[in-house]
Length: 320
Image 1 (cartoon, helix red, strand yellow):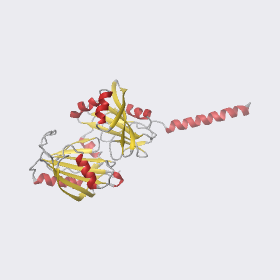
Image 2 (cartoon, helix red, strand yellow):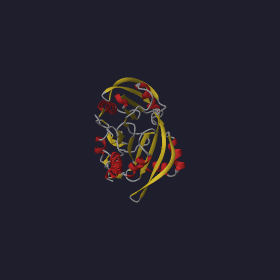
Image 3 (cartoon, one colour):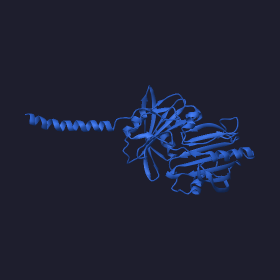
Image 4 (tube, rainbow, N blue to C red):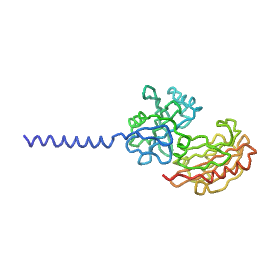
């Protein structure tokens, strides 16, 4: 009888042990604050805080969770992306995202829309989960992973369901969390950051300048090259052609210059409406890149142009 009981009990204990191990290996992580943002969330197992953008990255570097805080003036326009499935399909298609369906989460008495779809990039098809958290600020959280990744739909939705928003970070906190550093030079001042990977500066009294009367500088970084090339000149030209305010302009000069702590590429040109632009690009090892775009009204002072050069010279990637 005892022998028979041992035969029954031992497999049961082994099965229980295996289940406990599996449960432990898939246990959700605690909620973590995203530096420089108002967001905290519990990422899926195997994810860690990203060193170079606002969010989290998987241990294999193939999946990520990106947090983007949107300026107040953009909130209403972005909310229109999530009104219904036809609107989502149409609007997201312009960004190369194929929308499969629109779901929602119920969090603390409010409904959070989640667009679920896919996007082809860098030779892979990525599954995407994009959630919009309305408020001040409005926050968009995107989970993305290659189709063959271990991340599941359930895990992505569970991570989004843990999102909480705390009081808005100060500009100083957001700047400190950027993947690069830059030293503002007079007459320029910091405006704000975007998505934890870009910072805007201007010279003048206006914070919002749709007519482009004031000088504007935007510095942005990315963890992967957006095009199938590591030639700074080719990548620079492609980035310029995709930048709304300077695309279609006339290039007047180009040269290799120090930028981002390494040898970069600088392009000077004239925008279609007659303003002067200067575009710096540095491609770092590991496919990271940083770019600086300066758009200056015609007839800008030498002080302004010198300040652009000084700030470009100050840009550095932060060490992970």
